[in-house]
Image (tube, rainbow, N blue to C red; front, side):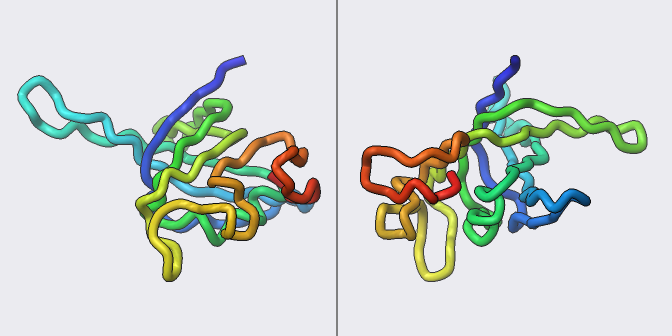
Length: 138
C-alpha cells in the first residue's frame, strides 16, 4: 500500500457531495509549495484534488476553507481527464496547521472548538482516553 503525506494550503472552500449510494464525500484542493530553484526563482506549486469520506466529511465541511493550512496523509490517486493527469489523495488522516481564517478566529483549533482535540483527525472513528465522546466521527 502506498501512503502520501503532504502539507499545503486549501485552494477553495470544501464542497460536500453525496454518491448515488448516499455516502458523503468532501472535495477540496490543496496547493503544495515546491520552494525555489538554484537561481532563487519560485517553483510552481503542485495541486492535489483531495477527497474525505464519511461522517468526517460532513463534520469538517465548514472548517476546510480557502487558505487553511493542512497536513494530509492518505492514498495517492491519479485522474485523467481530456488527456491531462490530475494528482489526488484520498484522505485518511489530517491535521489543521493554523494560519487560515475561520469566521472570527485565526489559525487552528483547540479543545474548546467543539471537541476537535488539537486539530488532529484520525481515520478509525474510535474514541480515545482523553475524555472525548466516542461518538465523534473522526
